[in-house]
Amino acid sequence: MNSHFFRASRTNALPTPRSLFNTLPSDLSCASTGPGRRRVSSSAQHSTPVDLEYDAYGSAREKSGALVILHGLFGSKRNWVSLAKAFEKDLRTPVYALDLRNHGSSPHAEPMTYAAMAEDVLNFCQKHSLSNISLLGHSMGGKVVMAVALHPSLPPMLLSHLVVADIAPSRARLSSEFEAYLRAMYRIETSQLQTKKEAQEILKEIEQDPMVRAFLLTNLASDTPPLRFRIPINILMGCIPEIGSFPYAPGERQWDGKTLFIKGTKSNYINKNNIPIAEQFFPNMELEHLDAGHWVHAERPNEFRKLVTDFVAS
Image 1: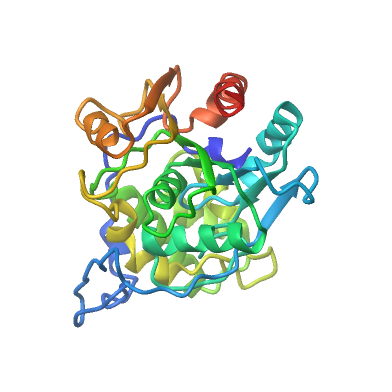
Image 2 (image 1 turned 135 degrees about the horizontal axis):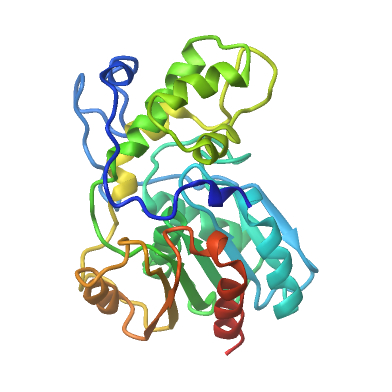
């Protein structure tokens, strides 16, 4: 599973070489207010849903009770192949792993807001006539599934269970490492590189872990030179503030269905400060802990599988 390539816990921002910050145009943004400035878009900003690419496991004829899985930033549906197959076997229900907009094989589109991504998921469920589903999301995907649950247009019979893996419904600035990754990827694209080894050398300037570098390079469109990424670097780079945000304030919306948060004990994404915020949005939430970092599903796949299966089957 490719998602394990990130280190277990990233609570401190990585140092970012100045050279990388000089390679990307300063006016790239989700909503530009002028050269070099960014405006965080409103959660109510209108967005036309895109049709998400997906992998299906089990019988697509069954429309009720499916499990829908959403990956995190820089991830894709491919990260979840092993667990998706396991969930289909355990739950005996269809499982869908989606590529979110601007990731994997799904369309490139703006804005990259949680409201827009939630509408993409709702559009997917409507087009596939799904009902009584369980939603599972990790990290950025976890914020998307929460935004779906809190969406004003959520159909009353659509969602039965919500599983959020190591993320909270809070607003916080993303660690500078993510911006550094994107700037390095932009540099790789614009340098007309011929080999993965050359790309590795650029990534090595900001990331020492070879597994992290390998994970980031899974986003290459192909090995055919010049190297290019399948994800739109310019869109993602401009929307870093959006990805760290959340579309609703505590007390603004609430979903009282069955909700499970799974926290990695070595990760600080879910903590004593934002657990009360999560409880305001999801009053019937449960919190489970696994001895892992942020990548709980990759570091503890068997334990994660059991937690999710037992919860969804309840």
